[in-house]
Image (cartoon, rainbow, N blue to C red):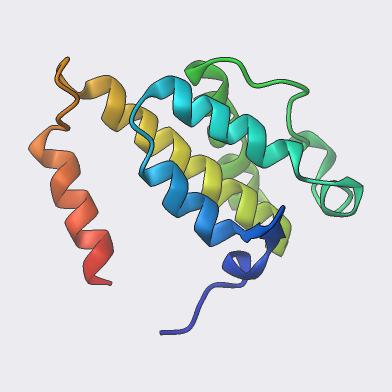
Length: 127
Protein backbone atom coordinates (compact mmCIF):
# COMPACT_ATOMS: atom_id res chain seq x y z
CA UNK A 1 0.00 0.00 0.00
CA UNK A 2 1.30 3.46 -0.90
CA UNK A 3 1.93 5.69 2.11
CA UNK A 4 0.48 9.19 2.18
CA UNK A 5 3.00 12.01 1.86
CA UNK A 6 2.23 13.30 5.37
CA UNK A 7 3.28 9.94 6.83
CA UNK A 8 6.81 10.55 5.62
CA UNK A 9 7.28 13.78 7.56
CA UNK A 10 9.79 13.38 10.35
CA UNK A 11 8.70 14.98 13.63
CA UNK A 12 11.43 14.55 16.18
CA UNK A 13 12.89 11.08 15.93
CA UNK A 14 9.78 9.40 14.50
CA UNK A 15 7.44 9.92 11.56
CA UNK A 16 4.07 11.61 11.76
CA UNK A 17 2.46 8.21 11.14
CA UNK A 18 4.19 6.78 14.21
CA UNK A 19 2.94 9.71 16.29
CA UNK A 20 -0.60 8.83 15.18
CA UNK A 21 -0.10 5.23 16.26
CA UNK A 22 1.12 6.49 19.63
CA UNK A 23 -1.87 8.78 20.14
CA UNK A 24 -4.24 5.92 19.25
CA UNK A 25 -2.74 3.99 22.17
CA UNK A 26 -3.21 6.75 24.73
CA UNK A 27 -5.15 5.62 27.80
CA UNK A 28 -6.30 8.99 29.15
CA UNK A 29 -7.31 12.42 27.91
CA UNK A 30 -4.36 13.92 29.81
CA UNK A 31 -2.00 11.59 27.94
CA UNK A 32 -3.46 12.70 24.58
CA UNK A 33 -3.00 16.36 25.50
CA UNK A 34 0.58 15.67 26.60
CA UNK A 35 1.33 13.83 23.33
CA UNK A 36 -0.11 16.74 21.32
CA UNK A 37 2.01 19.24 23.22
CA UNK A 38 5.08 17.07 22.60
CA UNK A 39 4.25 16.71 18.93
CA UNK A 40 3.99 20.43 18.25
CA UNK A 41 7.01 21.24 20.42
CA UNK A 42 9.12 19.32 17.91
CA UNK A 43 7.93 21.37 14.93
CA UNK A 44 10.94 23.56 14.30
CA UNK A 45 11.02 26.80 12.34
CA UNK A 46 11.43 24.98 9.02
CA UNK A 47 8.20 23.00 9.38
CA UNK A 48 6.29 25.90 10.94
CA UNK A 49 7.27 28.20 8.07
CA UNK A 50 5.44 25.91 5.64
CA UNK A 51 2.12 26.29 7.48
CA UNK A 52 -0.45 29.00 6.79
CA UNK A 53 -0.19 31.69 9.46
CA UNK A 54 -3.72 30.87 10.64
CA UNK A 55 -2.60 27.30 11.41
CA UNK A 56 0.45 27.96 13.53
CA UNK A 57 0.27 25.83 16.67
CA UNK A 58 -0.75 27.48 19.92
CA UNK A 59 2.08 28.33 22.31
CA UNK A 60 0.76 25.80 24.81
CA UNK A 61 -1.79 23.00 24.76
CA UNK A 62 -3.24 22.31 28.18
CA UNK A 63 -6.72 20.89 27.66
CA UNK A 64 -8.73 18.48 25.59
CA UNK A 65 -10.89 21.34 24.32
CA UNK A 66 -7.79 23.15 23.00
CA UNK A 67 -6.74 20.00 21.14
CA UNK A 68 -10.19 19.55 19.63
CA UNK A 69 -10.47 23.22 18.65
CA UNK A 70 -7.06 23.17 17.00
CA UNK A 71 -7.94 19.96 15.14
CA UNK A 72 -11.10 21.63 13.81
CA UNK A 73 -9.16 24.73 12.72
CA UNK A 74 -6.57 22.61 10.88
CA UNK A 75 -9.11 20.47 9.05
CA UNK A 76 -11.18 23.50 8.10
CA UNK A 77 -8.10 25.22 6.67
CA UNK A 78 -7.06 22.04 4.89
CA UNK A 79 -10.45 21.97 3.15
CA UNK A 80 -10.32 25.67 2.25
CA UNK A 81 -6.89 25.77 0.70
CA UNK A 82 -4.55 23.56 -1.22
CA UNK A 83 -2.89 21.75 1.65
CA UNK A 84 0.83 21.37 2.01
CA UNK A 85 2.37 18.13 3.17
CA UNK A 86 3.04 19.83 6.51
CA UNK A 87 -0.55 21.02 6.94
CA UNK A 88 -1.78 17.59 5.96
CA UNK A 89 0.45 15.94 8.59
CA UNK A 90 -0.60 18.33 11.32
CA UNK A 91 -4.31 18.08 10.49
CA UNK A 92 -4.16 14.29 10.28
CA UNK A 93 -2.38 13.98 13.63
CA UNK A 94 -4.71 16.36 15.44
CA UNK A 95 -7.77 14.72 13.89
CA UNK A 96 -6.54 11.40 15.28
CA UNK A 97 -5.92 13.04 18.65
CA UNK A 98 -9.41 14.59 18.73
CA UNK A 99 -10.93 11.23 17.79
CA UNK A 100 -8.98 9.50 20.56
CA UNK A 101 -10.13 12.14 23.03
CA UNK A 102 -13.74 11.53 22.01
CA UNK A 103 -13.25 7.79 22.51
CA UNK A 104 -11.73 8.26 25.96
CA UNK A 105 -14.22 10.85 27.12
CA UNK A 106 -17.18 8.79 25.88
CA UNK A 107 -15.97 5.64 27.62
CA UNK A 108 -17.47 4.59 30.93
CA UNK A 109 -15.22 4.82 33.98
CA UNK A 110 -13.66 1.43 33.28
CA UNK A 111 -12.06 2.91 30.17
CA UNK A 112 -13.79 0.57 27.74
CA UNK A 113 -14.75 2.41 24.58
CA UNK A 114 -18.23 2.08 23.20
CA UNK A 115 -18.82 -0.52 20.43
CA UNK A 116 -19.12 2.31 17.88
CA UNK A 117 -15.45 3.22 18.32
CA UNK A 118 -14.37 -0.42 18.19
CA UNK A 119 -16.10 -0.69 14.81
CA UNK A 120 -14.25 2.40 13.54
CA UNK A 121 -10.93 0.99 14.70
CA UNK A 122 -11.65 -2.31 12.96
CA UNK A 123 -12.52 -0.50 9.71
CA UNK A 124 -9.24 1.49 9.88
CA UNK A 125 -7.22 -1.73 10.28
CA UNK A 126 -8.91 -3.37 7.28
CA UNK A 127 -7.66 -0.68 4.88
